[in-house]
Length: 461
Ligand code: MLT
Ligand code: ZN
Image (cartoon, rainbow, N blue to C red):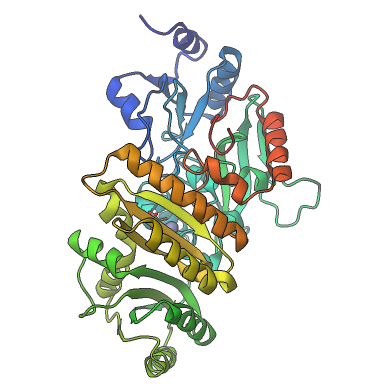
C-alpha cells in the first residue's frame, strides 16, 4: 500500500520521478559516513526548478522533512536520511546552462559533477579552481552547501570565493535569485554568502553561476620527506617565500603505509615520519632552479631529509596519489574523522598539543593525520581496531573530540574546516561558535524555513 503522502505528491506532480525500492532507499539515504542506517520515505529526482519548488510546497504542507542530495560524498552526515525524510536528489539537474565569455562565468544546474565543471571551463580555455579528490562524484550543489575547500585553497580560496550568483528554493518554496552574477552589489544582506555553507538547512541550491579564471602556468610537483613535525612549518615558510604555491599538503608515515597498501607507488625510500606534496608554478628552467635551491636550503637546515621532483605528468600524478588516495585507502575501515583548522600562525603550537592529546587518549589505536597544512586544516582519521565494538569505539572518539574541541577553542580554531557540521559534529558546534551566534543561526533558519523541513537535525539540533 503506497504511503498516502507519496500518492498526494504523485498526484500533484505526475511527471516527478520517485523511487521507493529498498536498494534505492539504501543508496540515496547515506553519504560517505557509514554510521547511520538509511531509512528515507522515498527519493524524488526532479528535473526542473519548478518541480523542486512544488516538492518543497508539498513537504511543507505534509510536514515531511527533505534531505537535499548531490553526490553524497560528504563526510559529516549532512546528506544522511535516517528518519523517514524525502531525499531530494539533484542528480538529474546536471546541465551547463550558460557560458559568458565577457563575464567569465559558467552557469550550471546544481547536480552537475565537479569534474564536469572543470571540463566545461577547460573547453573555454579557463579554470574553475576548486578541486579535491572526490571531483569525479561530488556535485557543485554539495560543494556550495559545505563551502568545500580542498587541495588548492592556498592559491584560490574556498568555494565561497567562486560563486557569482545562486538560485535557491527556500523552505516556503520561494525561488530566490541571489546576486545575479554581479561583481559589485552593495544593496543589503548578501544571502548568497549566507546560503554557502548552510548545509541544505536554509534552502535548496538549484543553479549556480560560477566565476572562472585563467589556468595557472605550467607547474611542478615535489614530494618531500621531513624528519620531524617542527620542520613542517619551517619548510612551508621557506617554500611560500620563494615559490608561487598551488598546493602544500602533508601526511604522516602511517598515512603513507595505508595508501601504499592500497596500490600507490613508493616514491622515496626509507622511513620518514612526515611527508609533504607541494605543487608550484614553474613556467621555465629559472623557476625550476629556484625550487631546487629552496629544496637545497631546506636540506642544509635539516628540515627535509629527502625529496623527489616529478619528471613527467605521470610521475606528478603518482606523487599526488600518495596524498589524494589516503581517504579512499582508509574508507573500508570507516574511520572516525575530525576535520579541524586553526590560523596558520597557530599551527605549530596547536600541533604539539594535539599530538600529545592523541597519543595519550588513543594509546592503542591507529590515528592517521594528513591535510591541507598550508591552510591550517588538518584531517585526523581514527581507525577502529578489529577487536573493538563500534559503539565503544565511537564513544571513545567522541570523548577525545570533546577534548580536541576544547584545545581548538583555546587556539581560536574550528571543529569543521571544510567538511561541514552535519550530524557528526553537531554536538561540538559550541566550541567554534558562540551562544549568541548559534541563537542567531536558529533565528535565520526559522526565517528561511518556517516549517523546519529543510535538512532538520543537521548543523543545528
Ligand atoms: C581530504 O582532504 O582528503 C579529505 O577532505 C579528508 C578526509 O577524508 O578526512
Ligand atoms: Zn580535505
